[in-house]
Length: 233
Image 1 (tube, rainbow, N blue to C red):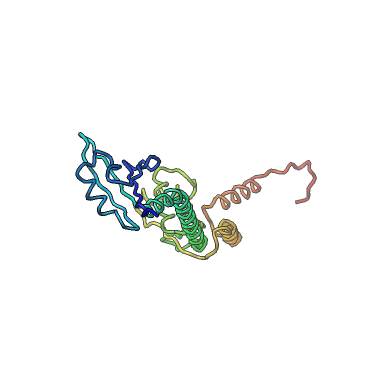
Image 2: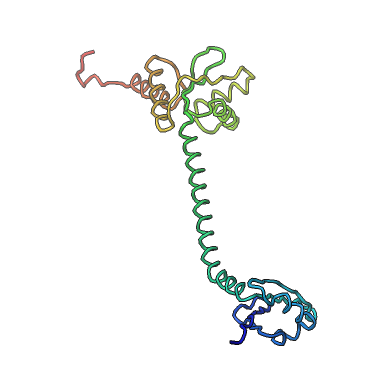
């Protein structure tokens, strides 16, 4: 039986579909010239061989990849499998990114939910009496916003007119005093409950609810009842 000849392959510029079968030195591309003998000698008799040579062809670089039969089979397998592996890797990365994004969103929501809403009074600096009831996670910052709006007389009419006058006269400014803590979902209800509690106690507030109540009370006081209605007074 004739001895089995080694089989090699050469791939030019990564063109795997048009590899060159090498059984003898003369099968190498002519461009390899003096390199053919040394490459064949290195590859001959090796079960696994993979190497690369880059040559200049005019102004262009040409890449030659050399494979023994076993190395060639491994390269073909990789070429067939790598797209699926890469796709699977991308899918895993996308899932990890989405999971991370959802974790961040959940943490932000939990942080917002955990941060309590505060019920506060704006207190007259001179009388120490409440003049306004509000709700905010940051009462001092909210008071500063009221002061800023009052300079152009925009926003809540009664409160901002009051603050505007204080600023114009250079009198001591009111302060925020925290009187309760609740959740953001219940904050508006708790604010109104505190407002109406103070109104019932006779506290003069600058909240819209208080202004409406006072307006209705004045309207009732000014109401004239005709004598012909026959109501005993």
